[in-house]
Structure formats: structure tokens, C-alpha cells
Amino acid sequence: MTTPEAHPRFSEALRELGLDDLHTRIRRFPDATRTAAEAAAAIGCELSQICKSLIFAADGVPVLVLMDGASRVDVDLVRKELGADKVTRAAADVVRETTGYAIGGVPPFGHRTRTRVLADRSLLAHDVVWAAAGTPHTVFPMAPEELVEHAGATLVDVREHTV
Image (cartoon, rainbow, N blue to C red):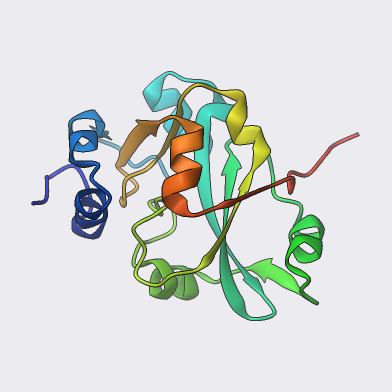
């Protein structure tokens, strides 16, 4: 079963994970919320409550990094965490090919292919975080621990620290 709010692939992932009730909590916005700041403003939450789903290439292999919306990923920390020689942001076509979703709508789980997932510990600072539901127009709320579990993520510290 799909809903007009969620991407069909994401709806299927919710069903497979036994999270059908999550459909009732998905919010759709008339305007795209492609950035964390746009999503936070539309939801009315703190920027750090947005869960960004970012695809990187570690030695050419896609990896998903879940990061709070107020922070940036330190690619050197990701490189060290993965034991990779080189980590770069994945191109838009690689993101779509790997996940099945366009940048700005990538959810933390329910992807076309299985990838390694890292989740920054900063997400655990909140009771609820908001993530994309497969489109730039839709988001859903979830406890961060539950989100990390469903994404099959490893908790890490890969947030860029500013001085």
C-alpha cells in the first residue's frame, strides 16, 4: 500500500519493517524542503532535529551517512572510520542509482541497494528527529535510536567540529 505522501519505495520499506502506522505521521509540504534549513522551518523544529541522509563514495563504494541538520560531515573522520583511502560526496546520479531517490528526498532506509550506513551520535541529542520520506516534499518523525536501528547504522562520531 502506498500513500500520496510517501514515495512508493519508501511506503514499501515501511510495510516490510512493520512501520505501517508511520504513514499517518508523514507530513507533506507544498514547497520542496531540499535543505535541512527549509525542512526545519516548515516543520517548526530545531535545525539539529533534521536527519540528513547523505551519500558519499568511499574508495568508489557508496556509503550513507546520517547527520543532524545543523552539522556538517567531516569526510576525513568518515575516511578513518571506514579505513578508506578517499571519501568524496557522491554525484547526483550515483545517489539516485544507489538509493532510488533524488537528493533532497533520500530517506534513512528503504533504498534500492544495501549500503553501509554510519549515523552520527549527534542525532541522539533529541527525542525525535525528522527525515525525508522519499521526496523533497515529505518528512516523517522518529525517535533517533529507532531510526538508527531501522537504517542498520553504526553509531559514529563523524561531525565536523568548528573551533
